Image (cartoon, rainbow, N blue to C red):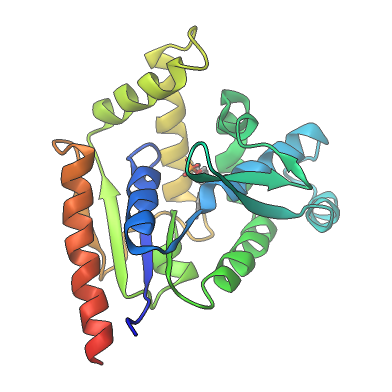
Length: 231
Ligand code: DC
C-alpha cells in the first residue's frame, strides 16, 4: 500500500495556494483543507456578534460557541465552510470579512482553536493543507512543504478577476490595499507569522499557468511519496 504524506502549502494571500492544493488533493485522492476558511469563519462570527478583538473573555466565550465543519460541494468540487450548521462559504469571501480576518487570525486564542482542529485533521495523513503557518507550526514534520509566491501586481489582477464576478463595483486599488494590509499583518504578527519554512520548496508562479504550477508540485509530491514508501 502506498504511504500517505502530509503536504503543507503556505504563502501570501491570493497566490493561488488553494487552487494548487485543491488540484493536488484531487489528483492524489487526498483531503484538501483550506485553513484560511476557518479563520474567515471565526472572523465572520466575531463581526456578526460584535466581539471586540481585544476582549479576551468575550473571545473565549465566542470560541466555545463556534463549530467549524467542511462539507463537500459536488458542484464546485470543493468543501464549503460550515459555521454552526450554516453554509457561509460565499459570505466569508466578501470584502467585509477579508478586511478584518488578519486581525482575527493574529489572536492567540483563535490560533490555538484553529490549529488544534487542523492537527487533528492530519492525524491519518493523506491531506493537502494550505495556509500561512502549516509548514512551520501546524505540521513542522510535513513530508512536503511548498511556499507559494507571485508578483504583487499579478496577485491583484488574479484576485480582481475572481471578485469581479460577484462584485462588479470592486476596484483594483481596493484589492491592492487589502492584500498589502493582510501581508503586513500576516508577516509581522507575534503568533505564528507567515514565514517560509527552512525546508520548504519555493514555487514562484508569477509566470506559470495553473497547469505548469500543478505539474511541478505534483512532481515534488510524487518524489516525496516514493521516498516515504522506501523508508
Ligand atoms: O488564505 P486566506 O486569504 O483565505 O486567509 C485568510 C486570512 O487568515 C489571512 O489574512 C491570514 C489568515 N490565515 C492564517 O493566519 N493562518 C492560516 N493558516 C491561514 C490563514
